Amino acid sequence: MLATVAQMQTLDRAAIEERAIPSLELMENAARAVAQAAAGLLGPAGRPEGQIGMARAVAVLGEEDRELTEEEREEIEARQAVAASRQADPAQWVGVLCGPGNNGGDGIAAARLLLEAGYRVRAFLVDGRERMTPDARAMEEKLAAAGGSLEALDLEDRGQAAWLSACDCLIDALFGVGLKRPLEGKFLAAVEWMNRRRIPVVACDLPSGVEGDTGRVLGQAVQAAVTVTFTCAKPGLYLGAGAGCAGRVEVADIGIPRALVREQIARGPERVQLNPAHMRWSLPRRPAQGHKGEFGKLFLLAGSQGYTGAPVLCARGALRTGAGLVLLGVPREVYPIVAVKCDEAMAFPLPERYEEILGRAAACGVAVIGPGLGRAPRNQRLARSLLADLSIPVVLDADGINALAGHIDILDKRSAPTVLTPHEGEFARLTGCPLPVEDRIAAARAFAKAHRCTLVLKGRGTVTAGPDGRVWLNGTGNPGMAKGGSGDVLAGMIAALLGQKHLQGLHLSLSETAALAVWLHGRAGDLCASRLGEYAMLPGDLVEALPDVLMECERAGRAPHERG
Image 1 (cartoon, helix red, strand yellow):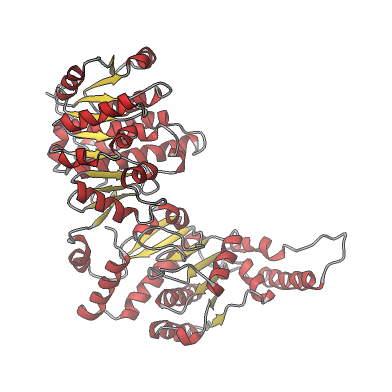
Image 2 (image 1 turned 180 degrees about the vertical axis):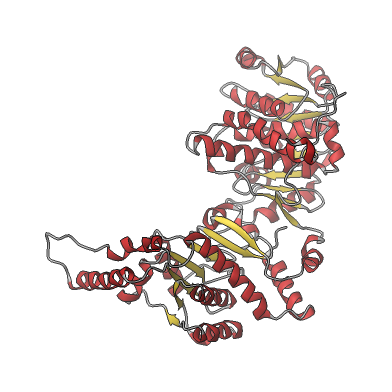
């Protein structure tokens, strides 16, 4: 379950005020999770391998064959002093950069716990002490009692900067979920300094500079190796640029009762779920007595001159996801090319008479309209007519969505379910909203509710929104999937899952089924990235990875004695 910034603030208040959980206890638990994440990166305190920061400490500026400036000599002397200190110290070094708020208090407490565990730790405050919260001050007192101190950060101090540069790990405790404006001043300088070093960073709750609800980067943001987020993950960790800053996300239980989380968040009318959430998606066995009609008869309207790959990828995605029959209708001029590429799908040239096309589509259980269809007026009119006249579920993709721009009334008049799968550019053309779409969750939810459809807003952290206000945010996938054709595969996969009658017994809503397809698609992409690399993987590789993904999910749905 994901929680927005407002929901987390309400939840924290309820835990402290209604359940009488001391705020310092919650902070101590959060700090323990952060310290454990740092220790996981570093290994046990005191290992000789802890001196990996040595190379950073002895790096010098300037060249030996020229005279050094005074500043360069001072820099070298500071680094040499740090290097000498490291030679005598087998412990790993950790620098903790803290803001004055409770996120900084988490960092101060984590510094104490790491110090007590035997790591060499220095904690630094990025701002004046007069702004520190009472809880942060209390944690500073505990740090002092443990033999540490909270120092004022001064990156112009060469000794301090050299020490931090030699660290094996940094902890970002500058800001939590409440940041709403771009970083500036000392905070911006601290973030930029961290990002210039090749030192792994553990972020507390959110990487500083990432907006919690949207993933928007507020000027600059910390590039974390690990983000330890508290109680519930935040949407911004999976969306857009924020996902690129978060690194590995670990959700830490800090002592807020799960019953309270369910009461405040999980049972809300417009909750946001992460894929996978209650699912490690599991699929049932296909019924032994099933026939191809029961496993879904799909109609695909796709393809045009110059776009003969899209219909084939869509059809293959559907078939690999279990569709029983795929009828692929393409414009007559590209039929010979598509027919050569298709073995399993039944490709045919579109008849001249609209009634014949409609009859073939209406005889199927699900239709996909749009992959590679192009923007020729005839094809656009055909897409709109089918959308208006079909009483079966329709997955509207690519140029099928473009055909709807200026004709949204056709969507509103439909009684059968519709799934739209736009990327941000297509969504902007359809709605007139500006790019980039800053709050993807809010935009997708508003559109789905207003037009009584399911919207799959593609991109980093694909958002699936249902007409009831529920939202699923996808946690699988990678940048290697950002290639033409990947979306065609997804459209076929969604249609295939919607068309299989035995899957309706899983009690998933149509929107949740679409979210399942998105998760499977991203999981296939992750397998491709691990085998082929993000640069080399292709949309066709996603199709070939689907058997492994589906077998994982099928095994998850079997009884333990059946899994082998």
